[in-house]
Image (tube, rainbow, N blue to C red):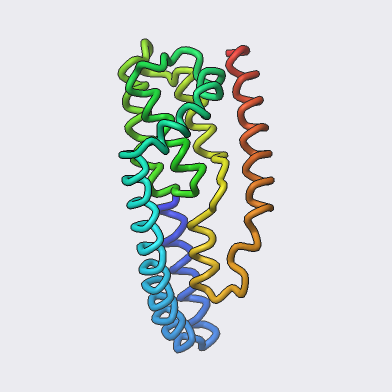
Amino acid sequence: MLNTIWPIFIIVSFIYAILNGRVAEVNSSIFESTKLAVELSISLLGTMCLWNGLMQIASKTKIVKHLSKLLNPIIKKLFPDIKKEEKVHDEITMNMIANIMGLGNAATPLGLKAMKSMQEKNKDKSRLSNSMAMFIVLNTASIQLIPTTVIAIRSSLGSENPTAMIVPVWVATLCAALAATISTKLLMKKF
């Protein structure tokens, strides 16, 4: 669908620019946007490298074990069919920790591993298990303590106070996670 919509937008924009005599402006905006995209990518790459490195270090220390102990009661309630000894339990825990730390890009491969492990244990391969549905919902809502990507973007765009939105992010992600979790639990009972 998006493969159709975006080219249509681009073509209509060029036609509109030609009809209004603004081709030079479109040209300059393309090059300016490209420059900004590269600068933003480099800025985000540095932030991602820093936090991914910290997650690698944390995974080799007792920090992750302590965080895992804190998350264990929550994981038991949210994923009752997953036992603590299972590999998927650790994958879910690492994914949740990465999301909480605001490391969405580091959380993605961990989330994919967890989904693959859950699919292996899934009895009906054509449908999502309850645990898989809950995991998707939690990843979408993802509670974040340190929204590193948003801070990096705000900082790269010259914000005077790039961390000013931390408290609203806490409130928004907590509300989203609670609403999503409650809805999912209720719908699981229905279906």
